[in-house]
Length: 510
Image (tube, rainbow, N blue to C red; front, side, top):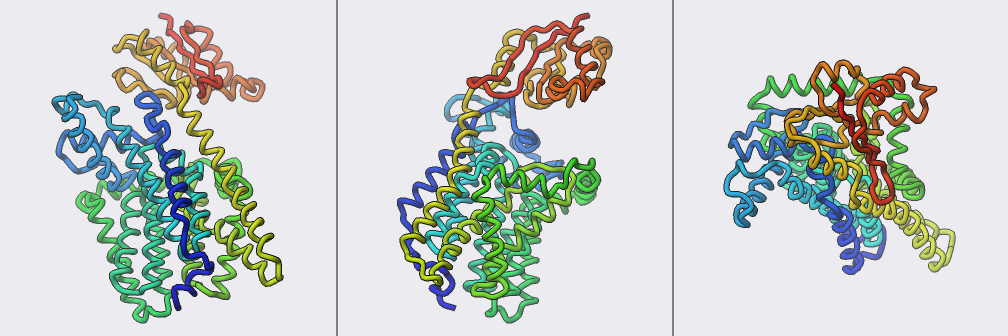
């Protein structure tokens, strides 16, 4: 199969200006307000990674003693922390490790996540070139503005790095199908191993290089190639997360606990696949999500009839498999869908460009087809772009959490005992501060008996009970008793200038 036959579009020369515009957009959206919320409103689970990375730097002990995630991204953040410390030492910021608090490393750590997010956009472009330049630019543009990916690129979490390695695996698998050599498949398998070493569910991406092996006609010895892919994936995983073997009992015990939680959690109010579809709808918007669905239909048709059956299988099977997998888990977060976003962007682009190109058989002139492509492109890009910009603008404003943090720093002594509702506000420099899911889980008398000095209530937790007290009479009454017996000291109500939840600071009366 010739290179021209491998691609469907004749536009094989992308505009450098357009690609630069896409990448600049990706950079701006992911690095905008990168330091928001540090150190008082960190992303959920960010401290799990950053605390361990900086502890490695301080202790020289490379055992993460944490297996909820594999260790690869902790090690990556360890390297960034060392570089950050050296830069701070050269600038005179600190003279020893004891002078540097973990909060001073978050922005650099987030910058690594944002960089991997931008790199993922470039990988999507390279993958899209297997179909054509217009496919590649539209897919990369959609990835650049995808608000779920933009949002998670602001935090030290594993989902954006996982998405990077999943996308890298897809690109290397496509190259392996184009030039089926053993080294090509080894690299594809290694990328899948790194995805697994970033987050355990990354193991599902192994289906992509295995499909490349199974569906590429030039691969004759399929079993040895498949075993090589699996072997290189295992080797990369062990090298990137060695303590999964070096401390195997701890890994197995820890792995079993969250695995059980994901399988036997509470019964959701609606089917989980519907919840995830809503997340995709909220991220992409209706036009782009409809186009991605159309791209899946087109991929399945090409998978059945050709041409290019292998590449269509690689780009379409994984998102379907992964969506089915996460829909079977009882713990639901929108960011869990990130690994399938690149494939959906590519599929949406193929629906626009390749789908409209099918109209040529009906002798529709070129001008209307071009206008239709332009219209669909705008419809696909505009809603997610506006949502991504709105997210960045919102986090760039002074939040209610920031106002509350400043007030606490000024008015509350460091040795005070504080209970904070939800995790919207963190007080890590207050040794006696703890976060609780709901303040109502303890009575006011218990707070007095426990010598609690301050309570900080968040509308994220108690808000629904105050909006509809008739639906939640017991919960409302429990909160009401706590609020009425406490002394309200400060209230931070959200506004256009100060987004966030309403936070109320109470003094516990003795």
